[in-house]
Image 1 (tube, helix red, strand yellow):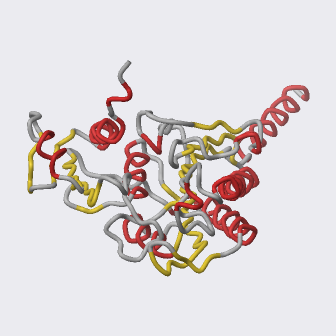
Image 2 (cartoon, rainbow, N blue to C red; image 1 turned 180 degrees about the horizontal axis):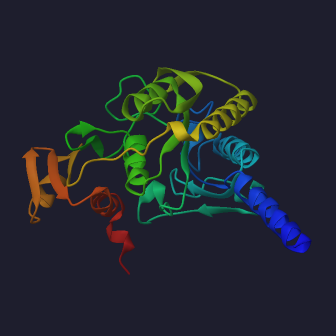
Image 3 (cartoon, rainbow, N blue to C red; image 1 turned 30 degrees about the vertical axis):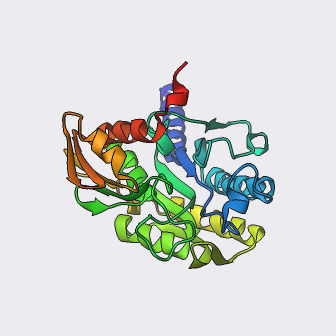
Amino acid sequence: MKRLVLFAMSLALSLSVVFCQPKKLKVYISADMEGIAGVVSDDQLGPGGFEYERFRQFMTKEVLAAIRAAQESGAAEILVSDSHGNGESLLIDQFPPDVRVVRAWPRRLEMMAGIDQTFDAVMFIGYHSSTNNTQGVRAHTFSSARLTRVALNGTVVTEAAWNAAIAGYFGVPVVMMSGDDAACAEVKAALGNIETAEVKKSLGFHSANTLTPEASQALIAQKVKAALGRLKDFKPYVVKSPVALDMSFKHYRVVEVLSYLKGVERIDSRSIRWMGKDIIDVTDFLVFLLNYNVGLEP
């Protein structure tokens, strides 16, 4: 009888240890570059820019600050999406060995490739405001060279809101974003009171009052920990299905040709509307439009 009692006590203790342990989190980080501290122009944003190599370092360190803060908050798995330019900006040799990285294009779900229902939280690092925002540094939506408006179900969206809708399809909330003041205000208007790290204040499309890299990294780490500390406060951002996608182009010719396709409605000289069954459906449509070019053909 004594042995039975001891066994029962041991089992109860073991179960209490198991069930009292905090849940190990799985975190998705999507990283862009326009919203990194100090970024203001093409000089920082692409190969050939005289500051690009330095700012790849700064971008990497801001993402690394988010990674370390997430791990300190209990994240056991982290997937990072390298989502700027050619998708090869992050210096991945600086990341911890247990972090995985999505790189290069084309890829399904674009800036959210690899997201699924197993994640607990999504974070956006270095994001910017939409092409319709008059205040943000380097404000654009997906393609500054091609698009002037992107809307879902009649609501103009930022890249952050679109990507949050993809995460929301899988039931995963966006909990934190870093970028300039215009981007932070815009994302809060769409997603609610998520944690935001304002790393610079916009003075114009090509100018800003910015934190230093060290200060921005510390702020990002602080906001990541704050977000994961109140994870229960966030809800997935869900776009109602079916989804009406409106896109306005800088040039009318592509709109004319797209209107030849069944299901594509030309709503004005430079705009189309396409109905998808859900956000994943319209994302596939967007990915094709943004990535197809003759150079892909053998």
